[in-house]
Length: 329
Image 1 (cartoon, rainbow, N blue to C red):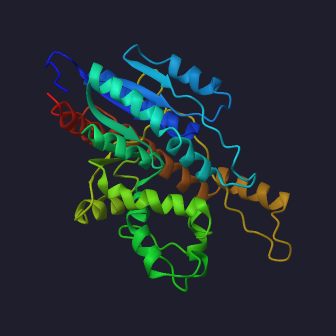
Image 2: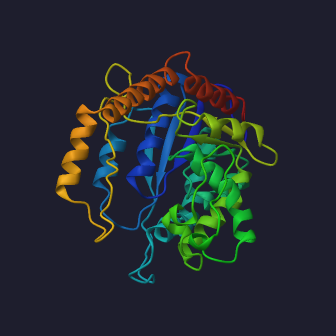
Image 3: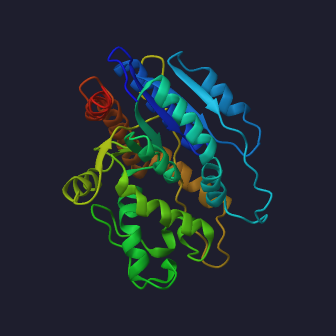
């Protein structure tokens, strides 16, 4: 399909179910529209569940961002105890026919330059390939998950046991060692469909034209260096985060949360209220609290710097935009 040079670049974004997938992709779309003059269409899959929260977010976006809701798919054949990762993957897999029809219309009516999905959206790759549209993945988590995902196919072939039973911690490039028991829940039961879905996606990540990561260099410097140096056979990785709701002045949202790590009673495995109170008091008044506050401020400042006009994440997203703008001219 030929396009005139007057048509602006257009991106299709297909989030799999979950607000944790939708919101970072919405923030990505906002930046591409506001700073790089793209048009964006969200293509939403659904299983018939109420979509009011998603619609509220999508309807509040700029006019350059539109949305299309695909016909709902049925999960009536699935067992009640099916894991959420399986449902997420199947919501897209069972919507592929509708997705292809929608994609065909976008290809014919716009200058479509990319399809962007989240980590569970790998079934959409075949649709993008059919229409010769570059395929990008946004990791809505962090770069350590990217490193783990790249390594997962090799890990699957190297061990026959459950990962929680591995004798030694897993050593990922640029990351701290990780015990098998601390790996994500879908990786803890290798015979489950959720793990098979995760492995299927991990094996296809290398097919992407590029991978965007919701992180920034100062948060994960070691992983960034490892991903840049170990690119053989892997797509280019772009740090474009943090992708979060911004305050009205464009800075990083002031809202934040802290995690309390309190010593557990060895006798009953419970945390007493006195232990929590003492630890909270220590965070507020003690040296550990001061160190935590200083570290949080450092990361907050680093995040704001990454998103500034000359920040690394801003420049990284601009590089992605330039790559996309060259496509299909």
